[in-house]
Image: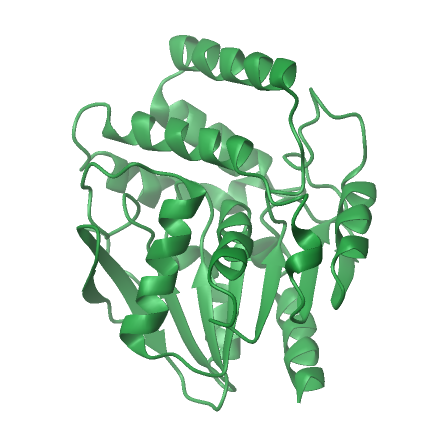
Length: 286
């Protein structure tokens, strides 16, 4: 069993969801961290170590991930958003900012769109959800996923994605890879692959790009200038900065920061800059 760097708690939520979470620090403001696809709580360690000095920091393992349950859920962005909302309600969280990375960013936006008022602000770290996929693009993407499944093992695919999430020194993700593989080995046969495929389909089929104008709360968007995963380089011939800029312009109270020499795993690779931007953003809310 993986030992997290913080005390791990568990809570039972509706829809047969048992969620692992950590709860560190104190402060008037609470930050709720939502990880990305097939990730886990410790990807936020570099942020929580610093931000817990000023805020209450809570991070969860989404159902099917990390130390949370491995039940047969119908994974989708709506499912995860409802889970996040149920967690917020059960924990009676107030003065809340939700922080999401990658798929966690899309889940964060979906949570706010489906449950307005459950948080006061959001921070999106290299979020998914800004892209729109045509029917042909969806077919091409799903076909590429199935081909990858055929020629690559789950472990190799996970390692490739994590390594490609860094711009410099891809080996810095080795500890994350080893722990995620250890967790993967606890899954039932084919559970991990089915969960990942369902999540990818959810991200593609449930975009938020046409609803961004409904996000009227303060929003901070952070992207690495060398993000190799967003946008999809095979299907969308645009830059990360252009995609992010167009998305931010649709949100009434959003601010974009592009971080130099940084890839997709922005909260790890440029943790100090991410933390600094978050503190400034939260202080300006007052």
